[in-house]
Every structure is written in structure tokens, then in C-alpha cells.
Image 1 (spheres, rainbow, N blue to C red):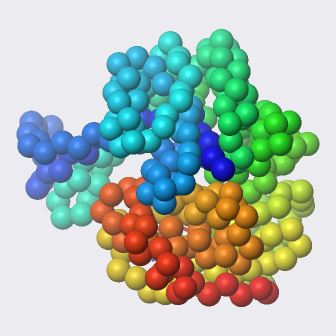
Image 2 (image 1 turned 90 degrees about the vertical axis):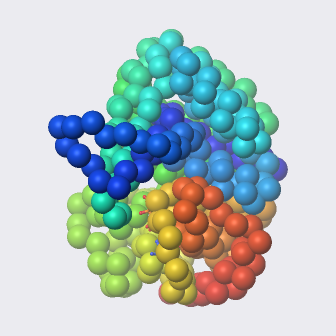
Length: 313
Ligand code: ATP
């Protein structure tokens, strides 16, 4: 059982820790961390931590693309990316002044029609080797808004489930297509943007009504992650609340990606609906307990799994 984790706009994530950020002046950095970044790569890393077979894919280009590939290799993660003419982007996070984070994010390369066609051919070949696909993050420039919808349709043609963690127009296009994603994982604000309503994470009856919105018809799983409040989910015609214990949060960045990894991991193992939600909450929580983004300590999985309460509504 292998999961294909897709990142269409990966990046080299650069972290510059500074005591104090001086504007309009020189800032010298002694410790620099450069990691393979992008939401789908967080999914891949969490699956790797869980010892689940996976392939990371997407597009890479230029020397930065090669660097990213070598970082994955060093981590023991199997990557199989399509090449593009453009250069893979870098995203800089300056950590400064006691917990402030200033980010400088490159938009990334613009893909040509040839790049898009090459990737889809590459993706179709990979589909023969996997049982489930996760697609995460934004579309790079140059790709049509229905690109993820096309990837869902190709997945289904190959008999493979496709989980989509995207937002905005790309997600809407996938929800309006004939072949629906098998799972989407909006957080509360993404859900609000989709249905054009305020979302109150404490009002569960209202959340259930909001998930009954026709935009979600035909999507088996809609999992709304609610940070420290756990999650609320719709699985076909049933609704579930997942409640989690209070934990010591070190770094919550990437918890949504870790949640998606937990959902894919449990689904690929054929777990029940309740245990799938428990797994998702466990990987989300375990990620928040680590300083590293998209990292979980597998030895703690069973302990936290038993602490999640899933209630059918
Ligand atoms: P991000 O965009 O930062 O990756 P997200 O907004 O998509 O995250 P969240 O709803 O914040 O996702 O978090 C996903 C899951 O991670 C939650 O359902 C929960 O299991 C866990 N989690 C996140 N924040 C906390 C927290 N403060 N305490 C406990 N668990 C948390």
C-alpha cells in the first residue's frame, strides 16, 4: 500500500533566527536551516515518520530543485518529481524578537503548457504504483484552475482515491467537477470562504448544517479541522465530532498537513471511520508537540490515539 503525496509548488524553506530584526540595516545570521518545504512534503515526511510507504511528487527545476531532491534523499524519502524549465522557489522565514516571524515567500516558477502536460504524464505513470493520492497546497502560476480537478479525474480513472487539501478557486473547481475528490480538509476559515458564511467552531449543529451544503455533494469525506478544538467531519451522510486532550504545543505549523497524512495513513490501512479520525487528530497533535514542521514521533502515536474521543452526532 503506497501513498503518493503531491506538491505542485514546493520550496526550499530557509530559516534565519535573529535576536532582533533591524530594518534598513544589515542583519547577520549564524545558524541557517534549509529544508525541503511545501505542504505535500510535510505530508510525505509525516508518512515517513509513520514508516508508511510513500512517493513524493510534484515539479522541480534548476539547482534549487536538485538541492530539494538531495534533501529528500538524505531524509530517506522517496521522491519522483517531473522536471520543469523554471527554478524551484525559496521561502524565507526570519524568526526574531522573541517569537515574531517575518516571512518572505517567492511566488515560484510559472509553468508552461509543456510542463503541465509532462507532469500529468508523469503522474499517470505513478498512479499505477499507488493506492491513494494526497494533493496539497497552491497551484503554481501557468496551470489552469481546474488542474487539481483533472488530477482527481485521472486518479479515479486509475482506481485510486484522491484527497485534496487546497483552497480558493482550485478547490472550488474540483468540487464543481464531475469526479469529486474523495476527501477535502478545510479549516474553519477555509470552510467559511467556500460556503460564504461565518463558521462558529463551537456550534456543532450549525456546522453540520453547513457541511450539508450542496457544494459538498458527492465528496465522501469533509474534515473540518478546528485547531485545539479537534475536528468536525462529515462522512457520506454521517457527522462526527473529534475531541482532543489539552496538550503542550511547541510549533503548530504544518498540523493541517499532518492531519491529512493521518487521514491518508488510516484510509490506506482500511481503518474504520472513527479510527481514521482518531489517527488524523493524533498526527495533528503529535506535530504540534515538535519543533520541526511536518514531523511526528511515532513512539507516542498509540498513547495519544487512545486520548481522542470520536462521537457520532
Ligand atoms: P495549518 O494550516 O497550520 O497546517 P490547519 O489550520 O489546516 O493548520 P488546524 O485545524 O490548526 O489545521 O490543526 C489541525 C489539527 O492539528 C487539529 O485538528 C488538531 O488535531 C491538531 N492541533 C492543531 N493545533 C492544536 C492545538 N493548539 N492543540 C492541540 N492540537 C492542535
